[in-house]
Image 1 (cartoon, rainbow, N blue to C red):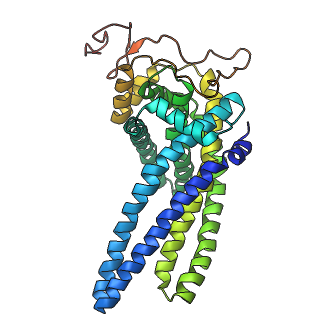
Image 2 (cartoon, one colour; image 1 turned 180 degrees about the vertical axis):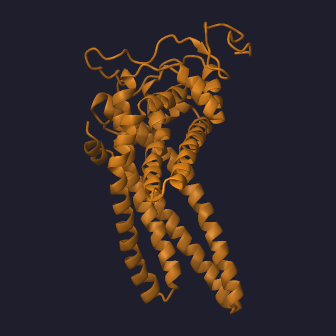
Image 3 (spheres, rainbow, N blue to C red; image 1 turned 135 degrees about the horizontal axis):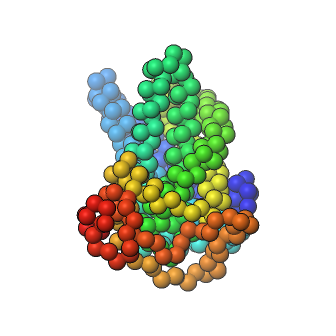
Length: 355
């Protein structure tokens, strides 16, 4: 299935994200009205300034609870359905129930899910910092390169920003492996296919810039009409609310489309990618968080296959002559030096450290 088709057919998840985002905006507005009422009772400009700062902190907290905790679980269900659509070419009839069941079966508890995602995103951030340091050095050494480097860092950020979702999709694809091990494999597969994925990210960078600007301007005009003209609120507050609403729209629709587009590109390559095992050692050297993710994956045992309401996703057919898919028995690789060891070995043959 093409990204646009998957986007249309999984729209219930986009609407759920929009409702969660709008809930944060509504709660933020109510908190602001309450705090401004308190400031009005005191009739003090100083109290009003304090209340604005309290409102900002309260808004950040509400946003974290609603959009980042509940929203992450909604996104996980969306990723599960996207993976099913890419692999099988169809979207489950009751996609919300299917996504919920897949997340529950794959991760058992939300704590496991958050642990996997946290390690993946932290590892990716460390790898991204390495790229940015090179870009910053180039921008200083070559006159006039700063703008180009900034644009390059933007689309690298877009590409790397969805590794977590792609790796999460791979954990749903490789059900026979533990979640940590599949996520570590997913990062390596992403690293091996970085050229194609960065190319796809570059194509979406312009779309992101245009849509975000338009969404912010339109919501600012609307909020300015409502909160400034009708309610008499400060224009800065109206602009902040407009930014919140624009962020909600971007998260619900723009980010969802980009996520689908990046996942389709990734899942088309993942099943036919033969993992280069020396990448594990290299990535462990670049990122302590990836090393932690890799070590947790090495400690996991194969898991039994759960029975789903719909048939499990079959392995996508590879092109004729393409390499075999990732899977099967793997050698044991050291998390410190990356050396290859026979499975069952207790100490690394390269550095001697316990495996």
